Image (cartoon, rainbow, N blue to C red):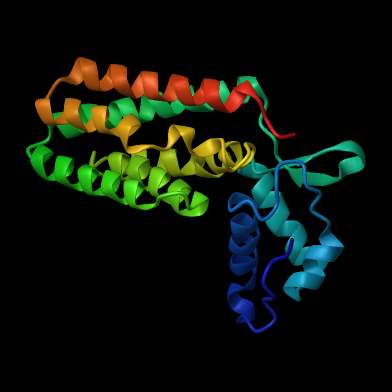
Length: 220
């Protein structure tokens, strides 16, 4: 496990680049939930000072991606079943609001077309785990973006790191069970019909099922 050296980066943007590099390493599964993040090793890998790494790790703590364990050792966060259920309840509320605003929008037809294209991307990902994860998350963030509500998108993005950690906490062969076109199509169908109660119910069921899936058994 490693991150790419950043020794050639312009010093004026170094802090931001280090933060992005570490965030990507955590949320991509390069580091798994429970893995120790040592300042010395990370600083050496990135070619930066320990202080710069320390500052980035503090940001990741604030984002819920990193947690302090015994003797202050920092590790990639591993969400408890209760936290995962809470996470998906919040997602259900946000994405329920998204479908509400899409259905009320005069651009609903275009939104439906965009969402169907996103489901096609999910189908095209095949058995590639990383591609499946990106296509799945791409669908859900697109759903929020199509609402036209920037605050909604910002709120969803704030949860994205913990969503990725939750996915990465499952074996790769198990996680994609919730990432199929068939589990997403009913959301689009309800939006296309303008059936708000069904659309919200489908989103809530989708998130409840995902929460149960990701809390059923973890790899750590």
